[in-house]
Length: 353
Image (tube, rainbow, N blue to C red; front, top):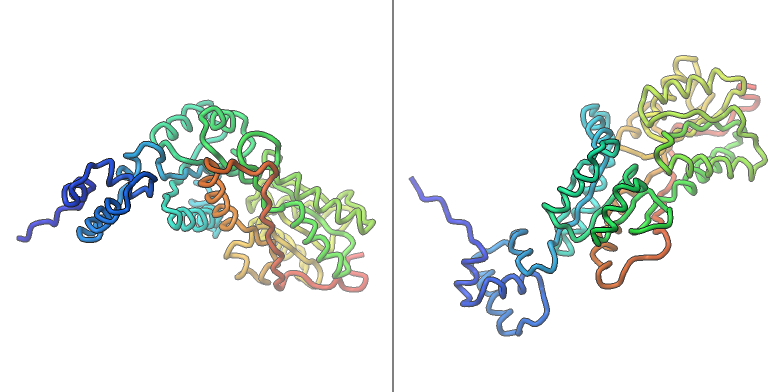
């Protein structure tokens, strides 16, 4: 039976190059004050031995951990995973964050935190103490949780608040929710719709009010009334179904509905089908998120594509740069786009009058 090949460690590199462990660590981390000849010697040993730096080796210099910690809401994330219904917020965040971190010599680690727990400070504090990250990405609804942002501010760790534009510590970042909602409303207005319903998300998310504001402003600019055309859901299918039924059965019959999540938009398709309404002939529908599942609905949904991957990537860049250059004083906005598919059309003459 063959012997298992021994893993190459930083100690092997140091021994081969005839230098200290700290010197190897400084070369791995591209730290200053390493003579070119010494650096070349260590790099030659790394290449010769096929050494791949570990997190522990990168942290030996003590100045950085080369880790970015991203935290997401535990309950909602686990519910989405269990539902297996195509929601890909986490996937997109990991795609942008991990690839960018790797390109810059960092690693991104993903952690779930319960916003509603009485132990949120202890839970997050334990993760920070164990990982000692160089930066933290906070996602909704954590982004404006005072317990979390205060803890991070007191720790001195740079952090980005995705889904927040409030003044305060950390880097505020948004995906232009108000602008996107306005863009969706304008698209429907251009198609001749005047009664445009809106299904918002839960109040605990700041982006909920931003999206409603964007819809209201676009309606006001066109001198259209919003009364009786707003319902609230929780981003899930069942709440979207209840909201869509309320709008479609209300006194003011909408000819179009914008839903604040793909699941609520899919529920709107179901509610329309229940009532014998054809989408888009009788009712146009637009969704937020643009997750993969909306391409395969019947009809495929026109959707507001949120740049989750690009936002996470930019957050990583800003956090890595923060120690050297500080962080932006104004919110960073990465605006998405409207992807037009088969669920929107010009309103029929006298439609549902």
